Image 1: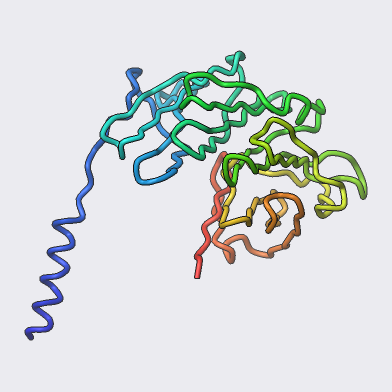
Image 2 (image 1 turned 60 degrees about the vertical axis):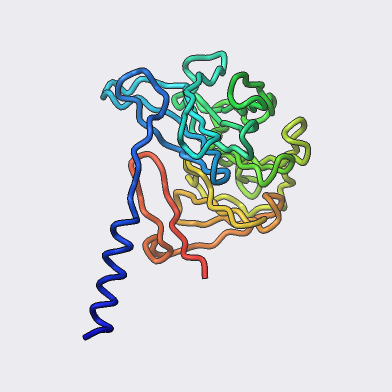
Length: 250
């Protein structure tokens, strides 16, 4: 009985101490929602905004905290085109982050970088994801301040049809499309999803519409594909606008 009472006492103590604190996001506009919440460390968190009013307006805004959420600063992400929809946010510090964006009805895509905490943004990879009718950027990820990968839907036809993927080793100053032989042939009608990839160390995973999981274990340079018969077997859940991977790490 004493052991049982001690057990319930520990549960009660944990429940009392495991409390949540509401924090403001810094936005003044009503119905601003948050998605793509990215935690850099215990103090630094970035997040993208979306219009939660029901009007589905395109929002190019973000918010940032560098003090563990005690204060948040909302900012406009200046992409110089109000029609660009941001589909991915990837910060690596309190000052440096990247976003990818596109006009969904037209495809293609752009990448912008900030080095001053989101006060100003500079376009990168201006010649990538520009094949009209085929290019469609899905996201960008940086493993550190220098090494990154940008990925989009397949280009080409037949045996040469491959996902459009670029890598950089200098913080995005220059980008190189990976060689054709570095990734599997894309299937007919296969495309990627707008989402943040799953990343552990140097390994990155992305998902496709054909139930395939693409994995690179060297920061996006080489890829292998795994065909799955049931997405549920791999912890993949379908959402209206994106595909989300849920992995258990042993």
